[in-house]
Length: 243
Ligand code: BTN
Image (cartoon, rainbow, N blue to C red; front, side, top):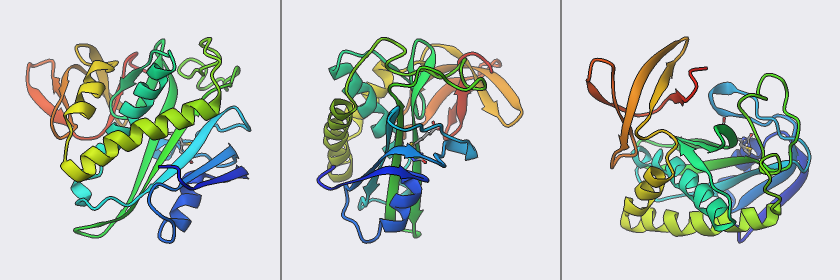
């Protein structure tokens, strides 16, 4: 990963750029920008990406797996970010499926975009956004977002990127070549911000109080409802605070 790095001072979105060049670039190419003018979050949200305040990068992946196995790659990314930050002395937790949390606030998010045919993947764009130096967040996210600097961790962005790419490569290769998931799942479980806790499952305007029990072999969240029904959540959003 990262044998080729394409660097920009400013761009609309590293994910959008990566999509445009994905077919002609090699697997593992990283697109990174100091600033994004149209940074994208999940569910059509905006992702604030001010100049030099964070890590805004996208990795081009071309795994030879069936598209059904692609969502697991988001978990690999979460596991490698948590592991990489832990290597640098920063404790974080993972809010399934794709948020990295410090002190109950989000410091990083993952946006995975897939281009696939019925049986094969053309490419996956793995977008990673990490708030590193931001000290002031806009009012709408100031209660829920934080940065490494704000939490007292003054670590260089280069060290973080290097560590993430190394950790990601190890786990990704094992998953693609050997279908090996246990190490990834164990990291996701050990670093989980929600397993064993009662959280809200957000469904549009509605929210349901559930207890998180585990992350299963498929990478789905296993939960227990108020009526003691056990169910699997395949994708979605959970909220620790209920907001
Ligand atoms: C989320 O938590 O909502 C996902 C945030 C993903 C942000 C990153 S920053 C680099 C890449 N380019 C984008 O436009 N978005 C992702």
